[in-house]
Length: 384
Ligand SMILES: Cc1cc2nc3c(=O)[nH]c(=O)nc-3n(C[C@H](O)[C@H](O)[C@H](O)COP(=O)(O)OP(=O)(O)OC[C@H]3O[C@@H](n4cnc5c(N)ncnc54)[C@H](O)[C@@H]3O)c2cc1C
Image (cartoon, rainbow, N blue to C red; front, side, top):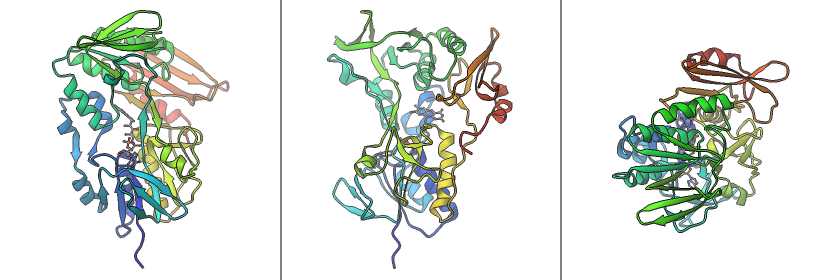
């Protein structure tokens, strides 16, 4: 009897890594990868330091979908939006109404940029970057422009600010919080990073809530809730991501903030799995590269009939702000504890301990980042 394939929805890092890992274990089982986009492979983290690396949208693309199909020994359908999952019939429905049966289904659907509820006639010109197509559009838009405003001083906002400032743009970063990377760093770390980015020309507007974006001639004008205004050529938002859960939710797959999975990356349907930016495990969403690599290896084993729970060691995140080398292993936000900070003119070292003095997180900025490996070894795993 002909074997139904493993279907993977999504051709981002999560979808392709699980396919690659699975192929190392199983050469015969058919794999079909369905993607709403072009299906080419690129490094998403490279988008926020592409200018410094002299990368253009063309050179950012590592492999086309055809090349990926060959590498993975898989059938890849680019520009194929899946509109429904039918768990009881074990099939999915494409936009053209075609149905494809699966034996096992992997959801690697990623996340979407959070859209701010802004007023004004300029809101349709707001850009955000969460994939190569977004970057390509942005890259073309900023040619011959000078002023770029970024709403959001988190990881992605700071990385783009650094990249754009070094490339010669006037960069203004607007954020509701008090300092950059407000969710990841203690105050001292945020202030240190802010000063380093200011030194390369980035201007920050903290405690600023953007209310309105209007077109004024060729410019966009931001109005903050305190009445202040800022004019810019380009407005980029980097205000966080929200896991792509709607397809799963409509299919009756359990969702919370993300698609809820157990340690086998399994949803409430035993043959439907999720990983990457769309997945929530132990109430946490970890939208980074390292968790995807660990999850993909474990899931590949599980898909090849060797059930393997995922284990996450501590996974520090390198912030790509060359003006201020930064590495952070943020503590679980649900755990109480305290930061202790050592500062010099060239560095900030912050350690997060719980009430029993267990090290649960750290942030290293400047000349101390080489302490990363020693500290990471001292951290408990995220999932054992
Ligand atoms: C600018 C930027 C810089 C980053 N830098 C870092 C970094 O330095 N370090 C780090 O660890 N992480 C970084 N990240 C995060 C990291 O890149 C992501 O965690 C990772 O790429 C997510 O991969 P994914 O496969 O889960 O999602 P995605 O790459 O978003 O892939 C989702 C896929 O699902 C497809 N899809 C969605 N819905 C459907 C549907 N209905 N039908 C068919 N296909 C569908 C999409 O077309 C896409 O192919 C960065 C992210 C960004 C945006």
